[in-house]
Length: 178
Picture (cartoon, rainbow, N blue to C red):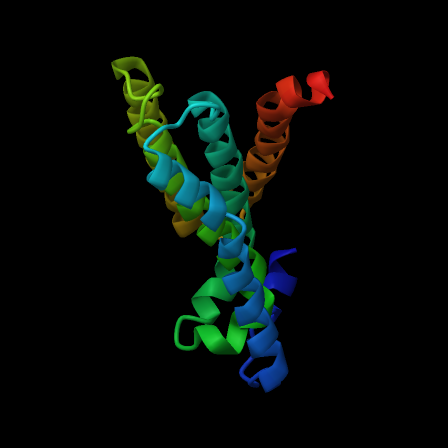
């Protein structure tokens, strides 16, 4: 798995259309969030938006991003000099990173606006963000010490499994209603 990841970024430049398609995909990812961000910001209210679901969705996305970065660590290292060269093989990681930032912005807006602006949602959000940062640091430390090792890949698998469970938890109420 990691050996193929190491080969994912090679010295040859990808065809220009592949770079353009990758860039368009990444740019399009943000378009879906613009209406929600605009509505939250312009209405001055987070009514109808669950802080818990926003937090779970951010957690799910962050777990997937950490798993992807762990598996793609060799590609990332080999692409340090030219992200464009590797863009086609890293589109998924870049999309996940962009989505995580968007979901972070949504969560921060949700807990800064009524009715979700109380002390409990804010403390919960702060605790979640600290936990996600600590987890990211721990995964990075494991991967830096032994990239593509059994512990590194086991961490990526555990993150993927946890992300699947979290997404079910986050969307179970909506699924039950429909």
